[in-house]
Amino acid sequence: MISVLLADEALVRAGLRMILETAEDITVAGEATDGHAALDAVRRHRPDVVLMDIRMPHLDGLAATEAIRARPHPPAVVMLTTFDSDDEVFNALEAGAIGFLLKDTPPTDLLRAIRVAAAGDAMLSPTITRQVIHRVTAEDRTRRRDALARLDVLTDRERDVLVEIGLGHTNAEIATRLHLSEATVKSHVTHLFDKLTATNRVQLAIAAFRAGIVH
Image (tube, rainbow, N blue to C red; front, side, top):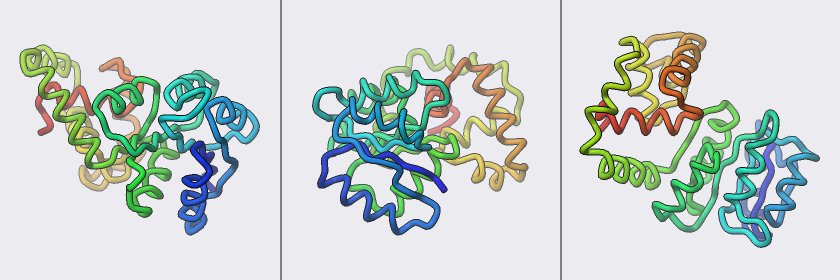
């Protein structure tokens, strides 16, 4: 079972709980009304995934996420918000969020995001992904050559895996698309983290976009 902590206002938590209770492999471990309560709930319940509102009273979702991710063996954090500004997206990713979904995300996509996050992969809503691509491409046109040079240390197969990560595919999906075992894909991803000095899959995806190997 994937245990999930809900950190949001009461009405939203009620809706999320109803959606999560339709999944046989997901359980709600606890709930929190603000960032401080979320930190305490993470310590008490040790969830696999935290669904975190980016704007909460007392301690906002960004600060709470940073504190949670600084803990040993932290849960994955997926940000939920009604907003989708560039600054919010990048601030959330910098804080350590593994995913960023709008609150009008369809229930099936929400459940998939939880499963993907629990597996250690990142998931962004299509709208957010387009924003990330647009911003990165706009900022780095003049630095694409340097970004591409960073990839010289990669093997051909590692580069193939990086492209797939840039397209938003999970390890299981990459394994199917490249006709590899999932264990082999995980090994390649580990090498990518090391060679590109990245700490999460979003950073790998950004490296792919900056180099222009994903469009």
